[in-house]
Length: 152
Image (cartoon, rainbow, N blue to C red; front, side, top):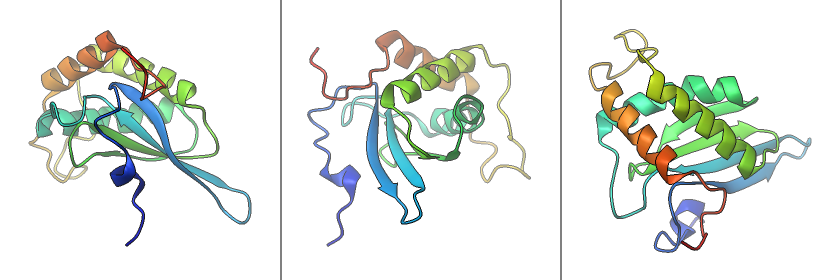
């Protein structure tokens, strides 16, 4: 059976919100690809509703590309507690956490959601800027850590 890193994580021991380097691979020619776990909510205790998650995905897709070089993808987790960020080169968790903090601050002040048209989005009717802003506020108030196993 293949090893899937996210299924090996003990979800009962992490403390959200956090940014965690979930994996890193170096290509034989030297390129590095990293996968980050951007956890907004405590696993198995809550989940982001789909409209808010979808809106956050759009806002993060644009915002994190403005903050970090080499972003390949930002994808919502199936459990709806956060996102995966796939990025080129080596970045430190603290750098990613700082970038995410800046983007979520902009989310709170956003007046529109980018790429919400039938042409640009596969489910353009399923968005909630208000809800996305509420979750961004919740994460910022809790503080984004770069240590998922911190003691509270």
